[in-house]
Amino acid sequence: MRVCTIGTGYVGLVTGACLAHIGHDVICVDNNPEKVELMKSGHSPIYEPGLSEIMKSAMAANRLQFTTDLGAGIAHGEILFIAVGTPPLPNGSSDTQYVEAVAKGIGQHLNGEYKVIVNKSTVPIGSGDWVKMLVLDGVSERTKQPLLVGGGDSTHAPEQFTPQFDVVSNPEFLREGSAIYDTLNPDRIVLGSNNQQAIDLMLQLYAPIIDRKYAEDTSLPPVSVLATDLGSAEMIKYAANAFLATKISFINEIANICERVGADVTQVSKGIGLDSRIGNKFLNAGIGWGGSCFPKDLAALIHTGADYGYDARLLKAAVSVNQQQRTLVIQKLQTSLKILKGKTIGLLGLTFKPDTDDLRDAPALDIIHILIELGAKVKAYDPIISPQSSTNPYLANVNLVDSPQTLATDSDALVLMTEWSEFQEIDYPHLAGLMRSPIVVDCRNFLSPIKLSESGFNHIGIGC
Ligand SMILES: NC(=O)c1ccc[n+]([C@@H]2O[C@H](COP(=O)([O-])OP(=O)(O)OC[C@H]3O[C@@H](n4cnc5c(N)ncnc54)[C@H](O)[C@@H]3O)[C@@H](O)[C@H]2O)c1
Ligand SMILES: O=c1ccn([C@@H]2O[C@H](COP(=O)(O)OP(=O)(O)O[C@H]3O[C@H](CO)[C@@H](O)[C@H](O)[C@H]3O)[C@@H](O)[C@H]2O)c(=O)[nH]1
Image 1 (cartoon, protein in one colour):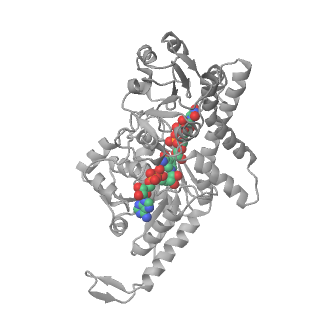
Image 2 (cartoon, rainbow, N blue to C red):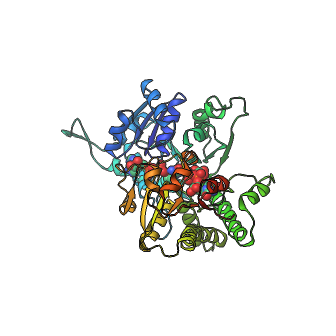
Image 3 (cartoon, rainbow, N blue to C red):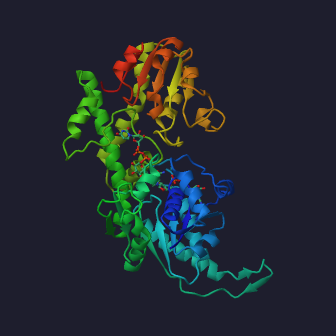
């Protein structure tokens, strides 16, 4: 099928590349010309394991193209995905200006051909109908204007046609760092629409994934597909993220009580996770949740509740526990080192989780800010954020180094912020010898306390 994805970030590019990988003919549109040039040359603008490989093979098969030309993308696609960002506004609500621009742009370029407009961005409940309205606004803006053709040297009477399209909400559940796997092996596909023709086309689009043709385990039963109304599909996305974030805040709260009573949260997680009603996933205590989705999506859901006169107390508590969790590490450093002014703290990892280059709302950025306010010097090593490449303003006062050894040299403490697998392979006895004081605060309970203490480290975990 002919597909156009608009927005080539973590969602749009992965979706476009995966749909091309499973045999569709895809054009990806982005309004950032530098990004488009990079992708045209076969390079991914983001770090996502496996993405460059499938981009290259789909491009070689002529099934994946990139452009800044929205009109060309819309003319090409029978199915048009909106996958632009919906970042948070200061009041917590979702900034939908990019979705608005794209929806109007689609309207301005629609022809008489039937299109399915798919909302993959995470958008406030009710956005499906709003997108429909914006597309129609775009159509009427265009049909009011005389149409310039042939390089602008002639004008025509306004076009008249009946726009034919339906809007589907198809929320995305991929995780950064395993986005390709998640796209080809989803737990479920949610399709919100009130139109059967649109749902049928989406089922046709996703058939190879539903039938597990590209799955890691092709013998599994077909992927569950849930068809709902538009608003319920939009709410499923927020509710899933809110549940997962609340589950993490729950285990962090238990960790804090464990620490006081002398229990070990890693054992408690195992013990409760074995109950199939609870499940063992998303029960790792640590520095709390971050990233581009959980913080903004909880804020947006709380805001939506307030808009409709509901005070979402449980969700607010999950956010508050998370905020407090981020600063625990500072207290642990103060307990060990007393005064932080003039001390050098080395951060192992910066990204909000491993296997991604995404720094959006990474807990490390908050920790850097607090440490600098307290007068500490901050060094950091991250396998994907190179000293040369980082332009993030939050890192302006950080000494980014290129190895764990340089990080440890003359540091007063290390803080493991991100559980990159390579951090388990470090020669810790050697590192201990390079430090002023061999302390490691393990914010992910990722390193073996026994191994670290045998290496000469004072290992400080979370909730144990
Ligand atoms: N990142 C994730 O893991 C994830 C997972 C599920 C859902 N989501 C949701 O998907 C949406 C996209 O998230 P993301 O992380 O991929 O965003 P992103 O910021 O990485 O990418 C957005 C892209 O859209 C482009 N863009 C903006 N306006 C445009 C326009 N008018 N025309 C064409 N391109 C335009 C930007 O240049 C950018 O490349 C958000 O709503 C997010 O909440 C994200
Ligand atoms: O047991 C756990 C699991 C995760 N985290 C943290 O939670 C955050 C989010 O992690 P994860 O969910 O793995 O990454 P994301 O890429 O943000 O994915 C989430 O957000 C996406 C965007 O909406 C959704 O599509 C995914 O389904 C949802 O898992 C990260 O800071 C993790 O370190 C923990 O602290 N403990």
